[in-house]
Amino acid sequence: MSEILEKIKEKHDKIHDHFHKSKGKLFIISGVSGVGKNTILKELFKDETLHLAYSVSMTTRRMRFDEVNGMNYYFVTKEEFQKAIDNGDLLEYAEFCGNLYGTPKKFVDEKLKSGKNVILEIEVKGALNVMELAPDAISVFILPPSLEELEARLIKRGTESDDVIFQRLKEAKNELRYQEYYDYNVINDNVNQCVEEIKKIIKSGQKQN
Ligand code: 5GP
Image (cartoon, rainbow, N blue to C red; front, side, top):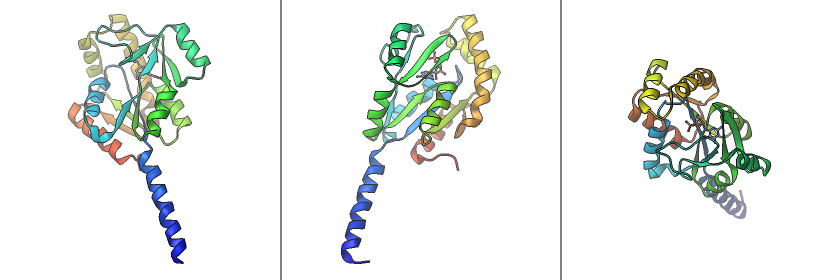
């Protein structure tokens, strides 16, 4: 190859490398209600080497006593949610146990462009939509050790009434059927181990072989 062609190739490779390094990846994390997603996410966000950005969803669910508007969710009315749908502001949305949940598109686009790895913590229907829209997204389904353990955790959490717990357990059994569509299934038996496993997945930036 002539010297000039080699120089052009070198420059091209550099641009290519830069582009790849500066573009973040999209991660979908799902897991049934009470599986411990919040605890796991808190741990993941402590690790700055993962370059994570958390996508704050919009929801019509009522705010829990320990939640902060704009941090856990953007708590909105049904009308405001509908407006966001009509304006095309949501990447995906779904109904879960009678409430609407959706991912604001702008934040995700901006963070990915800035090189951050964006975490979408969403339920299965929304996750399947994102997998179709963004086939490169890497998906992780967090599993409870057992349904009995899940029930015990939901009761212990004490954030929901008995009938809501019952509804969420019913939904959990339904959601567990979707685990096969995810790139990775990780069991949350031990939080630290589970966190380490997910960190490895994020660092590898690869889908399952
Ligand atoms: P929770 O009411 O327990 O905060 O969330 C209920 C379910 O909604 C969880 O499975 C959670 O992952 C999911 N969820 C939260 N935000 C979104 C979202 O933006 N889109 C979708 N599709 N699901 C979401």
